[in-house]
Image (tube, rainbow, N blue to C red; front, side):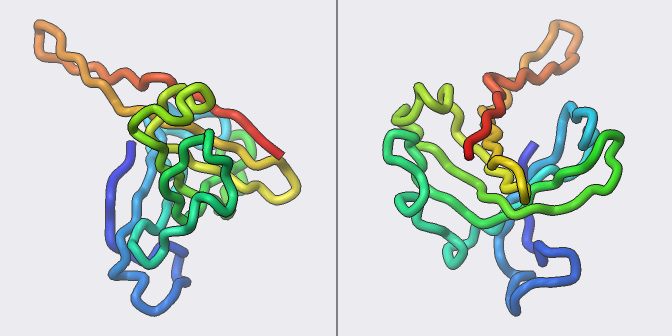
Length: 149
């Protein structure tokens, strides 16, 4: 899940005024062997002053319309040695440009793990469905991960 917050992004570090900057925080819903459900998986500054030019890094056919600096959480198996690595929150063209490459995802996060490839995780909207008995299920559509050099 993703939500907005205003706070200092780096634990105890940051630039003057960071506490007033808008941030997006991504929390694991299902988890995996390295980072379990309920843990923050990424965070990014999304204030106007933090916006980066998408044309500097990504090809036009990917459909990136905005990118923001952030940090992604990585860990060894069993959530051992968790650490923050540099990353970027990406917003994709809502008109479908880049759809072949992104599967129609609206948001992505690039993890820049030192000494490894950069990993792009793609996110689509959550689609809630209600059962007759009032229970709610949430389906995550088209979540994929890919890597690039």
